[in-house]
Amino acid sequence: MNLKEDVWKDITTLAELAEDVCSKFSKSVGDIQLNLEFPSNLKELQSLSQVLKEYSKTHSLYVLVLFSSAYVYKQTFSIPGSVFLNLLAGALFGVKMGFPLCCVLTAAGASFCYWLSFSVGKEVVEKHYPDKIQYFKNKVEENSHQLVYYLLFLRMFPITPNMLINLISPLIGIPFNVFLVAVFIGLMPYNFLCIQTGEMLASLTSIDDIFSYETLLKMAAIACVALGPSFLLKNPNKVKSKQAINGKDS
Image 1 (cartoon, one colour):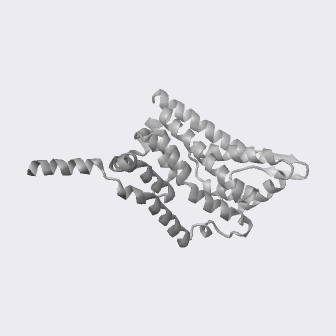
Image 2 (cartoon, rainbow, N blue to C red):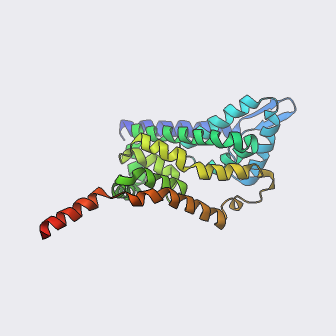
Image 3 (spheres, rainbow, N blue to C red):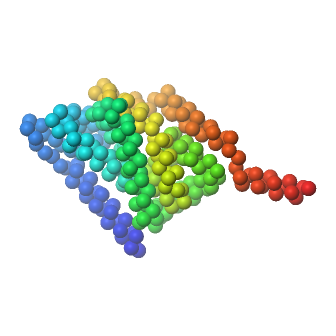
C-alpha cells in the first residue's frame, strides 16, 4: 500500500469517525432535546425537521451553520443521502433561501470531492471502479467537442450517480471549471424539486412521492433541452475522418 492509499484510508477513517460522533451527539437547550444524526428514512427526517424548526426560532444561525457543515461533509466524502438534506432545506428554509443555499453547498462539496480524489484518491478509485472509469473516459472523449452540454445532461438526468462523476472527473482530465459549471447548473432542477417538496415535508408519506413518473419525465425533458445545443456542434474528429476519406477518394 503506497502513501496515497494510506492517506485516503486515514481520511476515510476520520470521515467515518466524524459521522459516528455526529450521529450520537445530543444536546439539551432549554426544553429542547437535540438528537443529531443523519436521517436514513422519512420518519427520522420528519422528526429531525420538527426539532430543528423549534430550535431555529432562537438559534437560527447555529442551525444554518450545522446544516451547511453536514451538507458539505456528505458531498465531500460522497456519502449517499443528499435527497434527505435537500428535503430538510425546504422544510427549514423554504425555497427562497433553501434553493440557492443548496446549489452553493452542492457545488462546494462536489469541488472538495473533486480535489480530494485528484490529490489522494486516484489509486483507490481506479481499484474499485476500473470499468466505470474506462466507460466514462470513452464517453468524455466522444463528447469532448460538447463536454459542458454532456456533463449538464448527466447531472440533470443522473444515469450515472453523482458520487461517481465527482470521484472520476479529475482522473480523466475534465477541467475543474467545466466540472463546477456542470455541477452548479446541472443539479439545479433536482435541488429545486426536492426543496420545493420539502416545504410540505410533514405531509409526505414516501420518498417515492418525489420521483413520480411525471417528475422523471420533466427532468428528462430538461436534460434533453440542455443537450439540444450540442447537436448544432460538429464533432471535429468526424469532420477530419470525412475529410480524410474524401481526400483518398479524390
